[in-house]
Image 1 (spheres, one colour):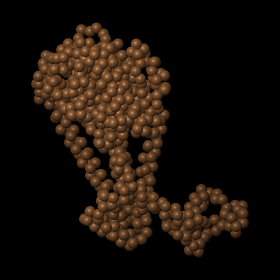
Image 2 (image 1 turned 90 degrees about the vertical axis):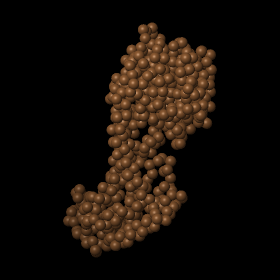
Image 3 (image 1 turned 180 degrees about the vertical axis):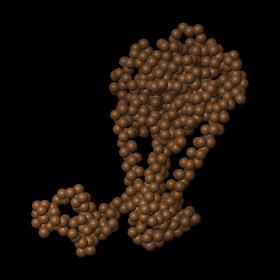
Image 4 (image 1 turned 90 degrees about the horizontal axis):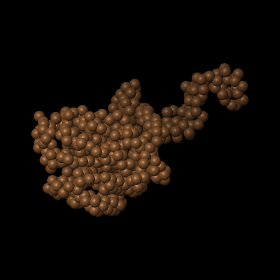
Length: 606
């Protein structure tokens, strides 16, 4: 007669998949089986939930070989997952097989600890270890992504807020649906990682205590080997075999957290000490009175655009042609280098560093400055009472409280420039249109005072696809002329995933932005126009290179020879292309040197 057996009574297998005999297990007939209608010699389908679970759990007794294979596979994967997390590097270019051939000291210590604990505390400690390794893995991945895009590691104190900006960037570049799908997928992966890592650590702890004596001997041997390899500096593929990556990573992050908290207080003091904080209005930039002064940031315009063998030929041809065209129009230019406070992104850090005269390389410093009375360059021009101040910010699509700090009387965001054409990925409009709108709305108007302007050009913002093209200035209209150009362009998803195509497209975007800006100056500039334009940061490492500097070009262009005579002592290069050996300043030095060159007298604030 066919019978049912409870899972605890089934002839099954041990935890290692070894079959247990039916005689040892003992079978208990279930009366329901006789009434189930099961065929003779078969197994009746379970009726109740409990019996179904028991039936499922008893699969090992029915397929012992498969059970043994599953046991070894699961244990092996758990071991690989835990050890892999302990030795995982935090840089993308180090994700190689040789980086994982290590004996992590943390694994030996964890094994010794787990062997010494009673069952319940052991399970809790193992789960906690798994959660900790999952957290370390997440931070390592964030370090990789931040290094790839921003040229630095992830800051545990300051950078969580930037994840929202990253999601917005994906939405603007590749669509809201893609962004939501990517966000949901990442959340599921993170939750799964924490759960799987905790389960893996618990499983390994259970394996350890199956044979405490053997595990203890193995742990002692591993510890002896680790100490010997460490003392003798034994290496594999040029790297130390004895390793403690997880402890080192945790120590580095803890030190970074402490330094971040200390930096906040120190920077607050630095922010209050302004060399021109008490300078009377009449002693600020007297040598530029009567001039229309335009500060323009070109997104991601970095040194790599001028010196990289792939991008440089086209960009340098554009700079040379633009220099020649401006010279024919009566303009002269001088150019140098500034070292940006940021890399690959966070453009606002570069803008605020150049305009405030402070090194603003993280979000906390940025917030400190934005909530202070620090004199930025626009605010200084406004303080004189001799200029109207305006900002053209086509990348801004929401409230921008920073306007108050910068002292800009009027700011035109993405919705206030009259553009009715298509977006070009992240960039809301082509630079040519933004400059034409600036001319129509502000620069071309008759006014009682000259204009000091801050203009942000966004067409060279990643992912550099699709890219706009120059059209006739008289054809711009409301921007609808760009519909066909946008539709014929490359897809952002195709370019951003391909390093070679990204580099090519990035170079073309810089050529476009420089051409639009210099043609605008030729067309609309006057005897009193002074244009200062610069990059805010280098492009991402995948484009600029892992060892790229943080340098960006900066140029001053004017018709009045006296304007450039004031900066003759800077030894900048004639034209729009800074020489390779032209002076390099930290970007935070620019404000004070610019103010001093044009006659401002320091009166420090206390």
